[in-house]
Structures are given as C-alpha cells and as structure tokens.
Length: 120
Ligand code: FES
Image 1 (cartoon, rainbow, N blue to C red):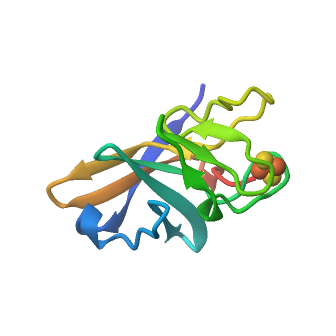
Image 2 (image 1 turned 90 degrees about the horizontal axis):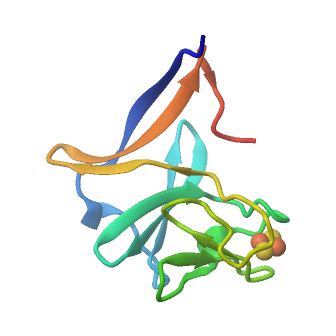
C-alpha cells in the first residue's frame, strides 16, 4: 500500500566540487533544506544537518577514525552510514543514500504520495 519512491537529487558534478571544510563535512541544499555530506575513507555519506538530540549543527562537529560523525554540542556519535547512535544514547540520525555516478553526485530522497517527508 506504500507508494514510496526515491527521487535522486544531483548535488554536484563531481565529489571534489563539494565544499568540504577541514572536518570533512560539506553542507548542501536540496529543495532549500540543508543536509550534510561527510567524507571518510574515500566514501561519502549524506546525513541530517541537525542532531536529533537537541539540534546541534552536525556540520560543526567532526568525523572520528571509525567513520562516526560527532555532534559538537554533547558529543553523541552517529554512524554516518546507518544513522545508528554509536555512543548509545538511543537517537537516530536521519541519513540518505548517496551515489557517485559518472554524471555526478546524487542523494536519494524518499517521497511518499508527493509529500517530501525527509525533514522533521
Ligand atoms: S545536540 Fe547533538 S549531542 Fe546533544
């Protein structure tokens, strides 16, 4: 009964075009909403701009050696790939599939019945 559909949004022609800060996190906009792109071990991941705990700006955090993004506010950690709260507080970081294709870098956003539901 679900009519979920993934729409792929192009965010750059090439991964090197993204404006990564020193912390390996870039901020991009999809339909006017900010999301983060994190880079780790030659892979890139798309995740929420704000922390699900208390709204810390994830782009101001850092990526640890294991590929977790660490929130700058209370240092909760999230696996960029799965959104799992790897420091164990029970939160979940919204994230989206990211594909690097010949034509560019794409982020997949689920749309349900025309309602764009990725942001809370
Ligand atoms: S707001 Fe991110 S850990 Fe508290």
